[in-house]
Image (cartoon, rainbow, N blue to C red; front, top):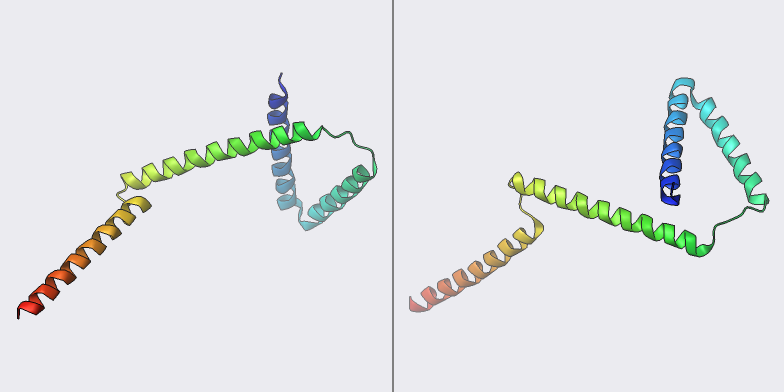
Amino acid sequence: MSKSDDIKRNSHSIWLAGLGAWSMIEDQGSETFNELVSKGKAFEHLNQTRDIEVAPDSRLDELKSRANQTMDRIERAFDLRVSSTLGRLGISRRSDLKALHHKIDRLAEALDQVCADLDRKD
């Protein structure tokens, strides 16, 4: 199993643990939440004082870069789907509205010119 598979599996487990903690808090009240926060602070403090083996900066940078690339792809896919959906609903895109505003401005200028010409003829 590759490192990326391990990361995906672990991140999903962390997500599920968070959902489980949230569910417990809803069932047991704010005392459970305060206890979890307290334990989290103690755990964080304990691990900050230990010598923790940290992955080399280059590995962390690579993981950050891959995560950012994935988020960019997700964002682009989301934008495309929203744009497509808006188009199907008949809602204009920003570029369509800009083009329409430009045409309206040109028409207004032409109309002003025609009105000015008519005023001079009278």
